[in-house]
Image 1: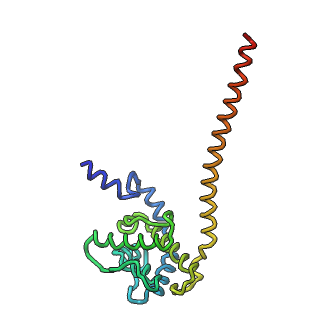
Image 2 (image 1 turned 180 degrees about the vertical axis):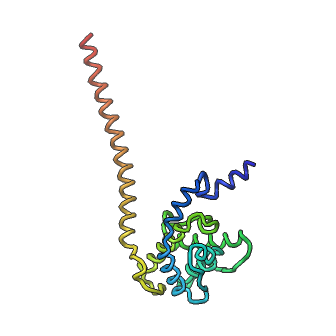
Image 3 (image 1 turned 90 degrees about the vertical axis):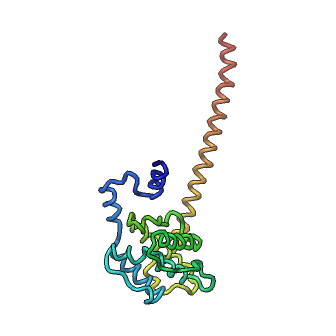
Length: 207
């Protein structure tokens, strides 16, 4: 039983999710963004990837086995393709494996961890808005790199440079806070030590 529980815990957003919370996540899914992403993926990979049925379910079904996603990340590389084997399979674990290969390649390409969806977000339809976010980040990176591999309309994506600056300053702020925190700690220590030092002579004088 314990092993089964652990397995369930690894499924991501499912823990303690009420229907209400799931509905809120679902509402973040953007149908307009879906159209833009579908257009980009077809422009990027060619018509061989097919076209999904309109709507969230169609989008999920299209990407679920990981093949279209793998074609997409490979199309952003001229020579050394990151996903060596793209093979559709009816088996769930094979499909999840293919999605994982895409996620690893996308991270290597430069998509930040905070922009990455989890396999279950797509495979179980837990959070398809997160899938959209990853694809938007990937498209933005491709436009920003401007290395000749991007196909489609660059206006579909914002250039990543601004976001990189912001992420960088976030990191700086975090490390800055950490440094300030340490300084404050040591200053407090110094002032407390000083007070104790002054306190003792006064006690001696009072006695």
